[in-house]
Length: 114
Image (cartoon, rainbow, N blue to C red; front, side):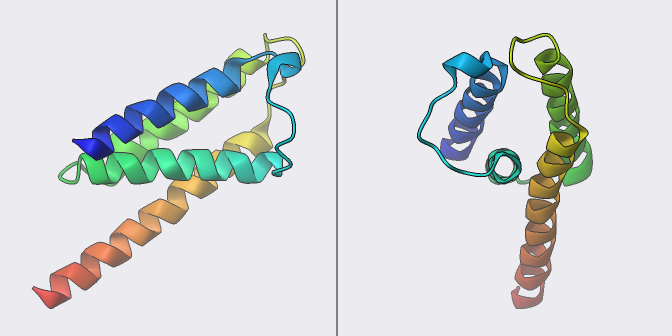
């Protein structure tokens, strides 16, 4: 249950920060933009995979999160100071795929030990 709450919190926070006009974004955070995208989407993917462990990762997590990333970019096109970015979508995908690989490895290791 905690991982599901974590997922919804991360989804809300990612949505909020992604859709704020540029002038209202927090300052003082010197993390590279693409890295922040990867971290946010990795957190979403990890919390979703732990919150719903019986779900198929590709259909239930990867595809919906990639769709969410595309939707954010489309909406950012209309927000002052923000822009549509294919590189941001790639960074989102990298974060999700890293978790997907980690989950697959963990499942194989777990299957071998049982």
